[in-house]
Image (cartoon, rainbow, N blue to C red; front, side):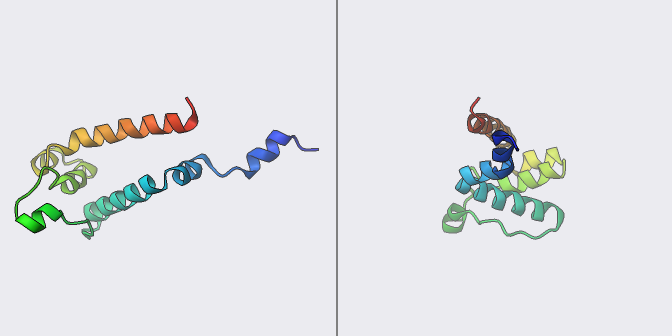
Length: 109
């Protein structure tokens, strides 16, 4: 006769899937952003969202160039990333720290 804990573990979806279900909006947003950065970096297809401030005023905001900078970071082009938007490097670091913190909270640590 199978153990109850073994039967319960077989029915649980994988941990990554449970985390994505728990954070649906966060996961969908970063899936889109991540895929747009990867497509822009390796395929050359740009389907990122244009900056509404730049569209309305013609002037760049503080966030303009972050996607381009992240594209350069994916390709390990650090100098070009800083030239595109130097704010991207601390933002990527903050995102990684937040992701680690959020996963630890999700796991109950």
